Length: 89
Image (cartoon, rainbow, N blue to C red; front, side):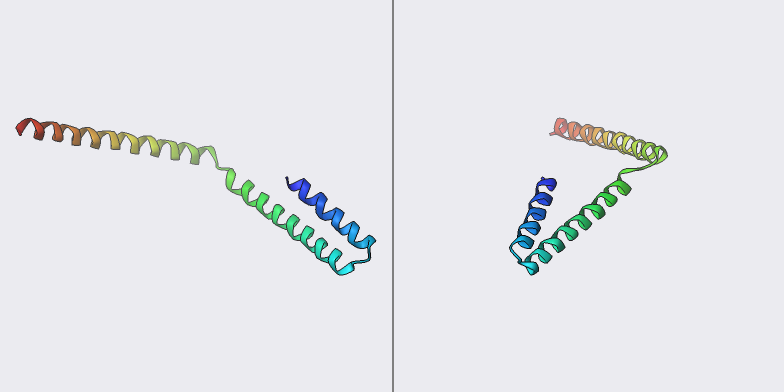
């Protein structure tokens, strides 16, 4: 999709230059440059945020496992309390 947008904008620049519409061709050229600049900055952000070290990944995984175990314990305790209160009624 991005390549199609680039091609269309480039064709528009060529056509506008051919029919001597210089201001419009400058506008389309600026659009191409801005679009390319945004692509480059978005790719850099994705690359930086996607890489984490193995130590960090292991620490995150162990924390998730620990919290899941704690949640199960709390849920079991609550279920035991609910079962006991319903028997008394």
